[in-house]
Image 1 (cartoon, protein in one colour):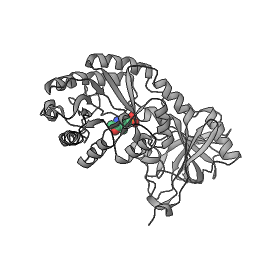
Image 2 (cartoon, protein in one colour):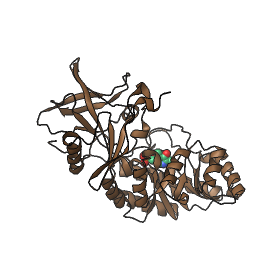
Image 3 (cartoon, protein in one colour):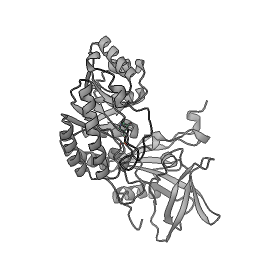
Image 4 (cartoon, protein in one colour):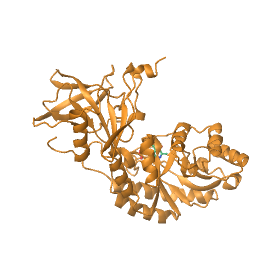
Length: 410
Ligand SMILES: *Cc1c(COP(=O)(O)O)cnc(C)c1O
């Protein structure tokens, strides 16, 4: 590659070129993910250079075993939102006391099962969940920490930092929570509030403004229901510059801002559950070009893998950045890049790529460490399931082999 894109480290680029184009140890025919665990380790260590924020990993961003193990080694705790995620984290040898359970669909049975398995921190998203947590805790004779998830609305207009008040199933309004008294739930320790209703924030200033506006209503709520507010959990949503516009958050600034928020809210602990901000940069997705054509003056590429392996661009309009794996000196031009599914939705974006890109060339997409493999739609049209590899200590290791459709078809 003539110019190295900022999201592609020269080391991994050289390694992938070597493994794919020369020694052919990495077979990308069916599409594959590669996670650079050394990059991840270094990044996580930099996030931990502070004592303001307790960090959790939102497992939904990437539940691969080796990714979870790397976060574990870096001292992260784990936020799980399903029985499957809980099982996967426990399977990696992580103590259940380091696991937190969020999510709007916690059934009474699931809550009881999580408590039996040793989970001791819960985010309650409804009055039912709070009641069920109290009942299960009493039955098991334990006292888990419970944070109430709050969903705020802002006045319509310019002052609204989110630009709208779309109602979601995450948490409850202040008015609904105001109907409880913490003393009515003696078997749980209601000790904090959780709020998270923004996505992919890319401005420190906007983020801080939003956090600041939330402090007074949250402190008021805690006071109204008789809770000593010890923990404030601000979720995730720290942004990634998918569109490569040269914008992004400064972690140093976040720490400075959150130290102030911690003081304003008067809490002992401030928590974040990071998804993309923790793992997006470590991941790559590779797929070969299957066809190239001109169509109504538009150059089109069709890849072996598309939204069956990388759904996110189709549902967010944010493409993952891409480059041609081999070196090319030719001029760039705009290509529409499509996948193999027979639906117009299967488009990974429009990109500037070298003019001489051709059939059998391999494209590498970046920022795919979060919301890649498990957020996609691998079954549609019965293509192959992508493989997953990790790169560590100069070695590529296959964690999941590619599978053909007969693996799941019945
Ligand atoms: C998805 C999710 C996160 C992580 O979001 P990112 O934007 O990837 O950081 C954190 N907390 C909760 C409750 C979530 O559902």
